[in-house]
Figure 1 (cartoon, one colour):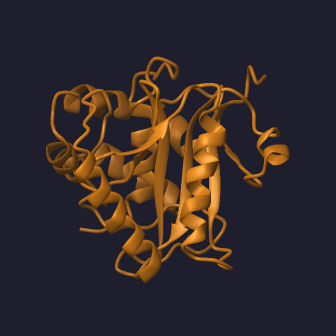
Figure 2 (tube, helix red, strand yellow):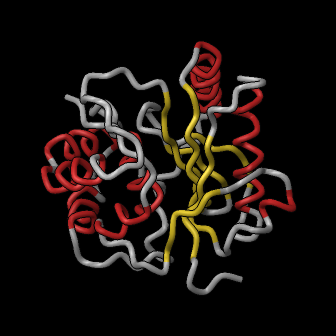
Length: 225
């Protein structure tokens, strides 16, 4: 099963029930002076990166290290991605689901989905998303509204979205292509953006010279510090 790839669009998450005080903003660089331009607070960071042999090897290394650590946080919401090209929607779901204390989600298709899946495991949540017609229809609608001509459902996509959130004093990477969250070390609400930038740089280091990386933040644009 495949969906049409989705471009980054803040209206998409608002349609899912995210209040408009939260916006999806570009992070123009990972150095301190450019991170300072991002509105605060930041609930989540989303990275778009190119899938390549190097980044696939890094993915495998992260999964192996996580298994070796044997750590698990049941407070982190994670779902497996079984639908091709759904990674943008999965990144939004991961971001919002883990920040419900901050992002007061309004009634709608996403709130219903999270209520239905909160007590399920990652695999079961992913299976539920496959059948979530209301979310897939919303994804389909916004995939047609991008600035570029949308590709077909079966066209190979070489980029992938994943999300970073801070939870219980750690920064977690959430990716539907990985079987579990990846703990990238200690973090806090105050240092989260800088910590996420550090991990994004680690991804970029595996493709030196590659410019096909994009970083975005879900930030409070109404009450920005």
